[in-house]
Figure 1 (spheres, rainbow, N blue to C red):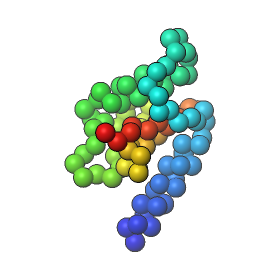
Figure 2 (figure 1 turned 45 degrees about the horizontal axis):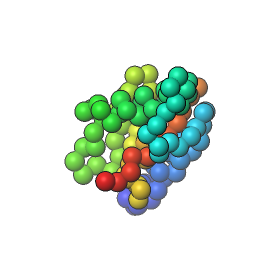
Figure 3 (figure 1 turned 180 degrees about the vertical axis):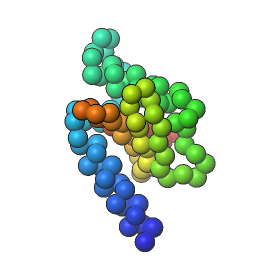
Figure 4 (figure 1 turned 90 degrees about the horizontal axis):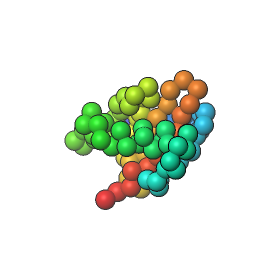
Length: 98
């Protein structure tokens, strides 16, 4: 039952990551004045720096707000998959495992 619930949540996050201006960003570099790319990079940097966005001990999923975006993170095989959205705009990025 627990695996089915986790699978359903991951499927929903995958669908949500596909809405709006969706992209997966794994590279930390953003072009100066790059508009959407710079916004994604700023949200990612703010997410990584905000103590409220840190993974709670043992959690497989968690969320926090970064500026006007609401971000949700899940543990994946590659690290942490993070989806951020606000009305009319969404994107996703991965924080690789150390």
